[in-house]
Image (cartoon, rainbow, N blue to C red):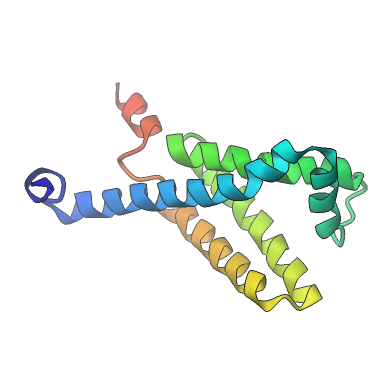
Amino acid sequence: MLEGKMFNSQDRKIHFGLLIMRLGLTAVLLLHALPKLFAGAHSWESAGTSLGFINIGLPPLIFGFAILLLEALGAVSFVFGYFFRAACILLFILFGLYFFNYFQIGYNTLMLWSLGLAAVFFGLIYVGPGRYAIAVKLEKK
């Protein structure tokens, strides 16, 4: 049924695949960030302390809140396609930092997941959101 209309060309298959990737990454990012973001100050401080090796002069509470907020806003950007490449750059940097953090403490499983997500975000910088994004539809009008 869908084969006739949705998948009649390679181009549409590629853009539908990008839509599925965007929705999946959005779910992962929101499931990771929102519970910590809504948990309050203790959770923010924990997130900020985990990346304390950066030491940019912010208190861990504010740094953790900023990290979680950027992750959640990046997820929203993925759904709509607005500021998509900027969100990919920020998330690439963020998950690269997660990778180095887990590398330092020797947590191999999360280190590999962080590296994998960083690679996906790096690739999406060049590919873009695809045709099936709200931002693309609104720009055409």
